[in-house]
Length: 415
Image (tube, rainbow, N blue to C red; front, side):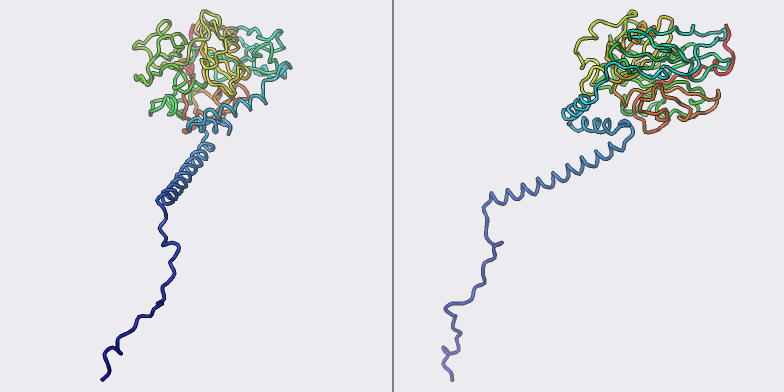
């Protein structure tokens, strides 16, 4: 029998031990927290950049943000906290593209359509008189009115256009002026999803087939409501509170329209259909209001590069009730007021500004027949938005239309 101790295994004095893996080494808590922070930061960065990239891509392909990529990027940038950077970029652009001083435009710039015709007797306003040029000396055809847009059933013009230079310094530029007869035309405010926001509204883009049958003119309204320093009322609802003293474009239920100071010239009654306010009057009592030449750009809107002379638009009313629209390049706020006064306005207000938002279109076509944007003509070739944008469902800003009154579209006006 073997001895029991000979059968007991003997432990090797130097048994093999596997090497310790580096990953098994316990690191300090600081290293772990740093790693987690870097991972979290990387994830957040990817998400933010992805979100910004997607929203920028959507903005650059969104026609409601404007025609130019510059305008679309600016709209996107200001919505995403890059207002300061956008303003700097615009300032650099304007520094390199300042309005030219001196020079003269082609004579064809002053209109080529028919001038004031022999107007039939009837219920309409007298045709407008030639506009004195804001430049030193009028060029041939400058300030002469031309008939545009649909006429009444008996051939009475409803809308005239004329062209003048904006001032005596930037004489190679031309701005457009439109005169509209409210005895023959009725106004309508079309609301948008971005101006005033919310909705839907009874009247919103696109212009319907039914409404197009009598359409004559369409033109831009005012600023985004955050910048308008005023209110908005339509379809029996106050969307934004109306401000006493604000410049107001007011449409009544009979289709007539005026411009005035809210609380003085116009007030709320059961006959008011729409009120679109934008800043303060720039024309009052037939002359530009005081202080327009002061360096107060914030009061009159955020302009391209913080410049005085940019694309601007305005709306005024004459002493006999005609509506006057002015729009074009190289206009300071005082230039805009001056042109409105020269066109006969006794009260006037600024509408929207900058190249992508100033738009006026007139329309032709057989009476009582549906039309589209192909029947439209822009007041100036430099207006970026084509007439077709008023017929597009994606258009999100508010605008005005002028359409033939029923009697004007179907019968000869009686005197």
